[in-house]
Picture 1 (cartoon, rainbow, N blue to C red):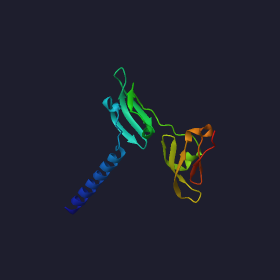
Picture 2 (cartoon, rainbow, N blue to C red):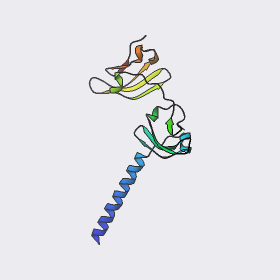
Picture 3 (cartoon, rainbow, N blue to C red):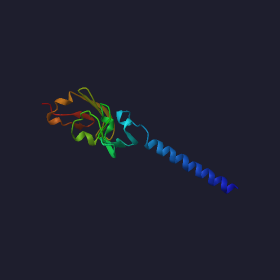
Picture 4 (tube, rainbow, N blue to C red):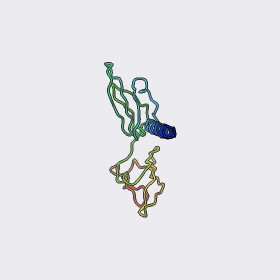
Length: 146
């Protein structure tokens, strides 16, 4: 009897852990008009996946990478997930900075310093950087100006 109870507890615990994992994987489904013509929607990191209806009524598997950068409605365009992205400049800073966020003409991020620490930083007028390239200089966002 005690073995049955132990196996029951193990089985219920395993089931609960699986449900938590599934919930975490499928959490944070972004809103958008695509939800009206797409199904089996889920996220994996910053990739949105779904099966969306095409213009001729067929279903097509599709993905939208970096969906967190969308600044417009996420829509289904003939079986493809689409949105307008916010512009994030190129540069080596992407390798050592996190939470990169452009707001108007200011770029903010948390960047690694030479000593291994992290620092909140901002670069104003980043759209005026030469070649559109930004770097991390000991935790500071920098660029050559035009």
